[in-house]
Image (cartoon, rainbow, N blue to C red; front, side, top):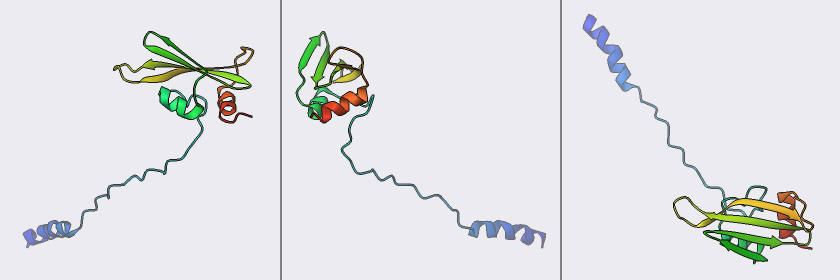
Length: 118
């Protein structure tokens, strides 16, 4: 009789369905066209920069690096591209923005001005 009483909970435990969490599927958000913000240019390739701002006003090669300069009515944006550590494509690692007179200016404001020339 004791064996039956001990066996009943074990049998009932086997009847309980195990609840395993369903794997969550991640749905990618639709791609949208966004404007680069401050620092958002970091990591872009030269072709991505040209696709966004148009042809650079100046392109300077120094060794394995490239500086692309984009000029607008109110500012100048310099993007410095260096090869990835594994010898991959050149990517933006540093961005400098200044007014036409050479005074440092806000990168986001300069990017906006270059995107919306008046």
